[in-house]
Image 1: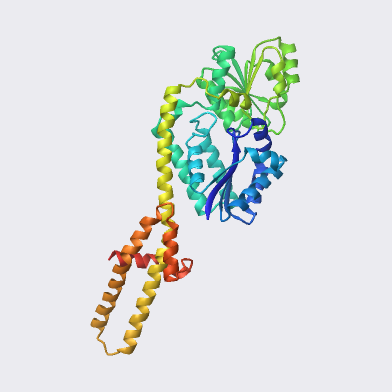
Image 2: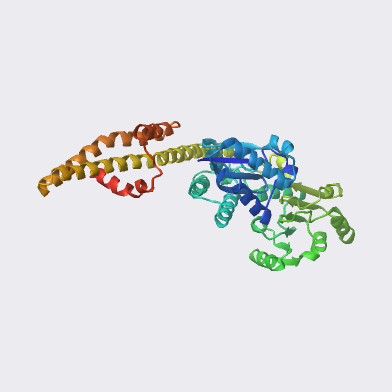
Length: 442
C-alpha cells in the first residue's frame, strides 16, 4: 500500500476554478466517503481550503485511483474531467510524502510561511478520523506532517518571511487608504479566518471593529474578543455604508456583498473610500464592485496574480525558505527510512517465528527418540540449538532491516519471503514477535 495525493491548488489552477471545486460541510463529508468507497482506497483524507483541494489516500493501485478521484472531483464540482485534468497534479509514494510535508511547512502556500495551513490540515485529519476513513498509515503520515510544520515555524524565520493572507491584505489596504489605525473595520463572518482577521485588525491599532455573521451569537462572541460590537446579518448593507475597510470570509456558496448594496450605501452616506478584502472561496464579494468609484477590491484571485508578497523582505524570505526546505528534506528522508524499515518487520518476524517452530519441533522429536535423556542435559541441548539458530539469523535479519531503508529495500524482504516460503501475514507470527526478539537480545 502506498500514499498518493491528487489535487489542484493556486499554483496550478485559477481561483475561479478552485471556487468551483472547493467543498465544505456535508459536501466534503460526501466526497470523503465517495473516495473511500472506490474499491482501490484503503484510507483517505481531503484537504479543502481557499488555495487548494487535495485528496490524500493510501492505495494499492496507482492508475485506478487517479482516474477515480479525478472523476469524483469532476462530479462534485460539475467541472468536466477534460477541463479539470490539466490543472490536477499527482504525487505518489516518496513525492506524496514530500508534498504533504512541504504543504504543512508553508512552502506551498500562496503566502509562503503562513501558519493557517497547519490548522486546516488538522481539521482535515480530525474529520477523516470522525468519519472513519483514516487508518494507521495515513494517520501517522499526517501527524508527522503536522510535527514538521511546527518545527518549521519554531526553528526558522518562515513566520517572519511570509505574513498571513490577512497581513498581506492589510498591507494592501494601507496602500489604498493610508494608516488604518483610525479607520472603521467591518468583519463579515465569524469562522477561524474571520477571527484571525479581527485579531490582526486589533493588533494594527483598529479600535472600531464591527462583526456581522448569520449566526448572531457567534458574531457577539468574536466581537467581544476584540472589543468591538456585533451587528445582525440583516443590517449588513447599513454597516457597509459606514465602513472604511471590510474583510469578508464566510462559508456562503453565493456572493454576500453585491455592488448594489455598496452603491445604495454610498448614496445614503455620501461617497468615500472603501477597501474590501475578500478571503472567501467561493468569493463573498461581487467582482462588479470594482466598477464603483472609490472602491478597491482585493480577493484571492488578485492576490494570486500579484504574488501575494506585499510587505515581505525578499532576502529574509529566501533565507528562511532555504532553511525550511532543508528541514523538510531531512524529515522526508527520516520518515521514508523508518517507513521502509517497518515494511520489512513482518517478514523478519515471520522468519524468526518459522525458525522457532522448526527448533521446537526438532527438540520435541529428540525427546521422543531419546526419552532417557536427563533434564539438565535436555535443557542445555535446547538452549544450544536455540542459540545457534539465533546467531545464524541475527546477521541476515539485521542486514535486511538496514537494506530496507534504501529505495529498493522491499526487494530484499521479498527475496527472504521467496527463499524461506514465508507468510508475514500469519497472525501467530506477529503475536510471537516480542518473545522472539527477547530471545535474540539474550
